[in-house]
Amino acid sequence: MKGSTHFAIGVIIGGAAAAVYPFSLTNAAMYMSVAGFSALAADLDGPSLLSSGLGKVSKLLRELGLWIGILMLASIGYFYFTEGNVYPELTSIAVMIAILGMVTKEGVVRNALVSVIGIGFLYTGLQSGLNWLMGFGLFVAWVPWLKHRGMSHTIWAVILWGAIGAGLENHLRIEGIMMVATAGYASHLLADTLTPSGIKWFYPLYKKSIKLN
View 1 (tube, one colour):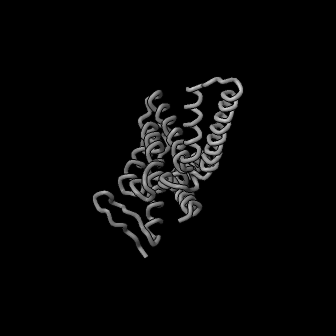
View 2 (view 1 turned 120 degrees about the horizontal axis):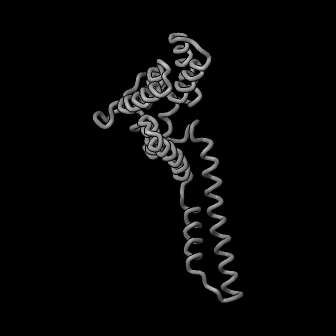
View 3 (view 1 turned 180 degrees about the horizontal axis):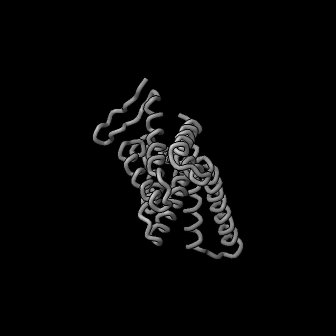
């Protein structure tokens, strides 16, 4: 299912929460933001609405790595043939950069960029003593490396996300944040259950996909 559809469902959940819980513009914005993001979070495990921007950056980094490596090798070759100078350290670095630029898949670079963001959240959580932020950072750093519609599309991920939402609710002191976060994340899994391939809700305990035609 498209990321835009998941996001729309999340926003609707946030809007419903704004109608149920004590209303204020700040709370309503928070409900819709948390629910919308939660409805997209499971797709951090693959190319999606969340990672498409990073995909463009990763492609640029890949091309830059390739051409920087080639230019470095060309410069080293020029100095060798004109001056007879050899630079083994620079040559090694240039070769590695060029090889990485040639063989690294775009998805690997993208995943690394997402993980760096997650590590940043994890570090901030450690520095501030916020367990929920540490959990969020670990989630963001870990999920990009998972198989698409794998562990991030299970009931265990919903429970983990609910725990993160509970910590955020306690931190913000806004009633209902945990509920909208959990509902937003669960809505993603429910929507994917309606697709032909379904998802493995109880993986790895039950490895077959569950789908509703």
